[in-house]
Length: 228
Length: 228
DNA sequence: TCAAAAGTGTTATATGTACACCCATGC
DNA sequence: GCATGGGTGTACATATAACACTTTTGA
Image (cartoon, rainbow over all chains, first blue to last red; front, side, top):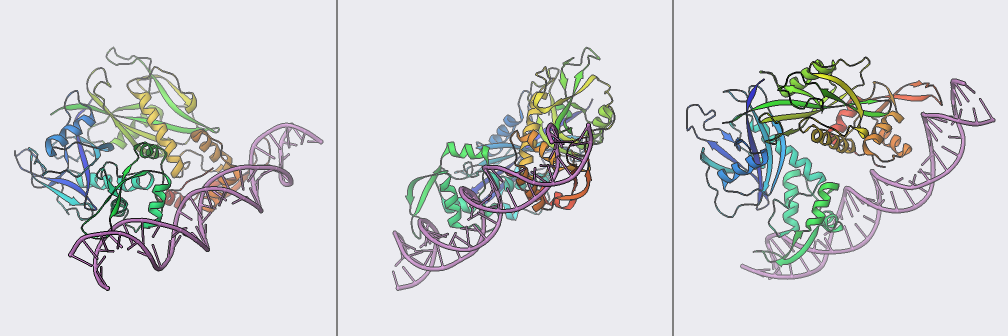
């Protein structure tokens, strides 16, 4: 009976100024045995004894980024026999949604560089292990998810405008949405609760909203669609 | 860095006489170190070196049931620290769809009893490990899947009647479907290709169909819904 | 008064849903 | 001729999609 190395890796999404970002870590070559020095990689690492997968993800993200996770969902488990050049290793991948952090991110112990990449201009490479594959799977999942579930509670600030929310959908779906139909739909579910008006640097003030948590949760289970 | 036992476990679905079945194995107590003797368990076991998860699933199902798998999809990875009483072990769970086998099933090496259970009357227990949880997750996934993707190609015989297909949906969704609307929808996609008429023991002969593979595949990706 | 961003309704089309009777066969 | 299972169409309700101009503000 075989034993394998098991680690968790997380694809993290954060939303800022109407763009969607993923943080990637540039691996340092701390020891000669660490593979893929200088390659881009996800936040992740081994699971401690007694820890379950989610705890391991949260611990790693706290260690590497000093971040609390809003939402965590198991994505897929990657286990191609040759995915780690050293020996057989499997990765339980998660995808995480977070609020854009206020302060600068702390660099992790085994990384020399953390950078945020807009999802439509991810680096070409090189990527450590099969992390490029994992990122692609996470993006695909989030794109699918946005079509039949509410998304945004764990990415947007507490208060947000309809335009913010719509830009999130736009970033993911890469197609134009109709402003009027979009608002109409959301209001028809009473998913949005108006809070106050906010005057930006330019233009007419915008109405801010919060999600109605109960409705949000209900729609997560029942599903809905946003349409045009 | 920790190493864990890694195994695959498959929840298998097969459709026969308008009912949906899952095979379960009654564990023998071959050696005193094997846990859960006499408990119901899924087909599964360790992964061999050099084998990926899917290969391991297929090998196990061939060994245990002498079956070829039509469709295999990764379901979820279970890794609660206490799920195996012996030591830390994780299970990469798959769900499999197969055509109802013509001949009797062979009993596996480490099982004393294989039984097919209709999904609505699964045994109360006891189940080995967290296999009850895994089965519940698989059923939930198949129920969700049936709502937005075509299902049936890998469960039904090559030729089938609309009533067969509808009964499959009925078994999963546990609600009544409208015969007329059901046919109308499927024909509108040209998902069904008529083949020949079949005279059962009673009643009017029924029109048999095959799936149009190209349309089936397209709908798997695009998604669709069946409605009432 | 201009530029910037936000807000707002109506109509046509497509889709979904409800509903009941006749048909072909074997016995 | 009757019991069994299979087949079929229409009318109504709801949901989606397309579409452009006016409002509020700061500079």
